[in-house]
Image 1 (spheres, rainbow, N blue to C red):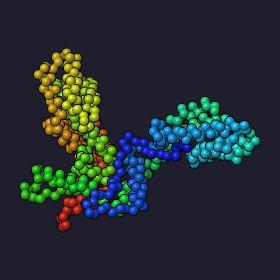
Image 2: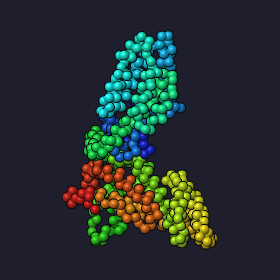
Image 3: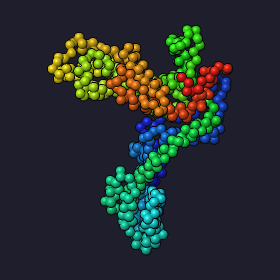
Image 4: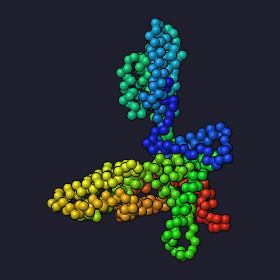
Length: 489
């Protein structure tokens, strides 16, 4: 009946996946071993607790909210019908002669309990006043003798709510004062109290966040270990993920030997470099051909979003670089020009991460917009517009950015990835690495991307570092080979 009984997380970047719980594929002739139902339920319970704790700590915008299904859904329609039937029944009871206050008194008692749950330890006087004003025993006696005044009690409840609610709820509490029908008033009181309960839960959560951060690493690691104990294959995808990164680094070392090494020397891939490479691969993950690693599953939505931002930023920076090479410095130094250019390019390239995005058409539109903005500045400065030849070359180079192998796009992509790698490698006490010259015009966006990526990666590494170390030890160092820790470069 009450909206506040069920809560769920409210966040635009809520992960859509949990650590894999499926039974791995088994070859024909070897049927998969069925796990006991109790084990699977225990795993799901661990996953649920782990996901919730992770969201509270990692997502600064995490909030609890009431579970209100869409009104046009089956659940929403059933809920509305049940609620309406309840309040209609209460209305009928109060319309009896004499009125039947049985359910009304039960609701008043529940309102009292909710209000008491919102009190802080310092609300000693208010608690005493509430006990006196909402004395359920006295209210029953008043109802028995026909002296119960629901309007007076409603006014007291609304006044008390006004003294306890957050400022954001003031307008809704004020609306309660204009309701005269006792059923309408009680119904709205419960609705607003549900919101106030969520406000209190979120306030408490925010207050505890610093303490949660201190315990989160050990808690998440222990919860994942509990999952691993019951489901030993829960690191299979993670192992494949790290193995792919190690193979990529080993392949690159064959093409470009590390500084100081001879042409015939054996290059040992370090665990730290492998892990950094693995994290970087998540920004352009091929989900169709590779299973997502279990240890970063809870951050998958955030990492995919950062991957989309990275792709968009590379294209935007490439457009700015091409444009700057075809314009005089006076054009880019014109107040407001760069801002307008970035806004136009960002709008036209929005959604460029989608497979069905018309990249060629979008970049042709970018070329037209860039030409117009540049010509506007040139004309405003008393000069002449771009010649047809310069205009054609500019638009052709911008259209060429649609190709993955475009040299400017490759250059910008390498600079962005290099900056993000340097950000991950930077000590915690050190500031952001310097922005490459080719990315100066998107320095602010790049810095924000780096901070967000670094925050996710460092927390993940702190939690799952022991698991990664064990896997990388087996992947990188044959028996007897010297080992390097995760901090080795």
